[in-house]
Image (cartoon, rainbow, N blue to C red; front, side, top):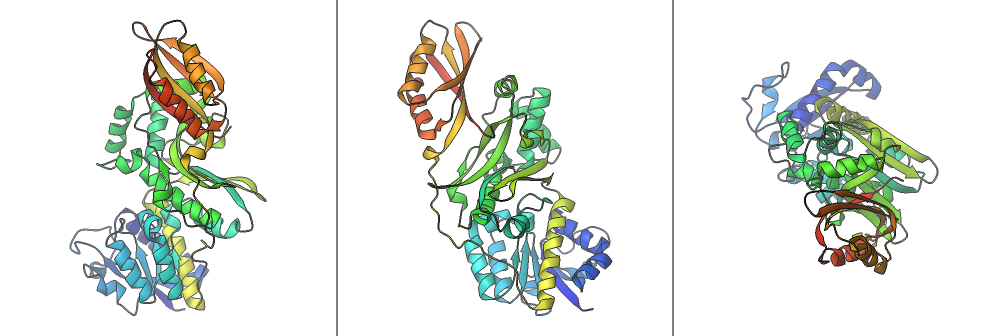
Length: 427
């Protein structure tokens, strides 16, 4: 039994998790793939830093050439994160005939086209299961298990930090700033949490999923993005009153007008499967013409969950090296247009503060009607002084219509503030 030799680029949370899995389950893994797995080098910034127990310190190097230009290394495992210098290193490894396994969503979302072309040209694998959903298998099911389907929809909770925060806001009635501090204290949010709370982490992931599901290149720039920073306790409470929960969703749809791809907070019916996904868990809901509806659920981050996905990709790349074949790389063989956000259709929740006077609701309803927006329900609650809070839920309408109506409504003298607009999905 020959050995397949690996070189790690990075050895943080995900890299050390994958290493522990390969070491702990080494005998079983070797029997499953028909080869032993040997770690031959690990690129780190500081080779002298203390690492997890049991790792030979002689494996550590700060010279990328020891990994990328080493003819004895078969597979490069990129777990550095970021796009620079990760892009340069991955391209170099691919051009040197090494298969690459990565968990880097930024790299795949921004530079996927270039990297897949390099993998194809050099007849090696580029595998990235760990880039979306942590330990949840989703990339391989989309590319293989569901490949016979025409996939129509993907809708998912793909950021654990924001899901934890919204869960806490719902359960405890806490405000945004309080739960953000808690998330940072528990290590769920970074010191700079903007990638999570502004929706960009989820946007990178949904661009990857949409590209695979709909066989067309979807980039980060194609994704409409809203985060959760405007979600208030009042929105959470109204959602509950209306039998919804608030979730940050990544949504992609293949429509006759092009690909919809967006990330934003949503009201989700309490009966929908995604409504029961709480805390740091992720879930991805897929609909195909043959399979119908399927949901993938599990831990979306962490050393061992994401390390599990990385280790599985290593096993697949190793099998292919033994057989001298490559697996399925890029599947973006179509060029579908991106549907503009103004043309998507949804139901909408709108919360306003207005002066409590006769005729206010009539003037708002007139502005909505002029833009072909019809109302499904209206709630009114008094607030301070002469100001009242009105909540509107519309029937399904085009985004452009509701936005045009709100431009008129915010200029009405009786309207103090448009507090929030949240789309309703999953009915």
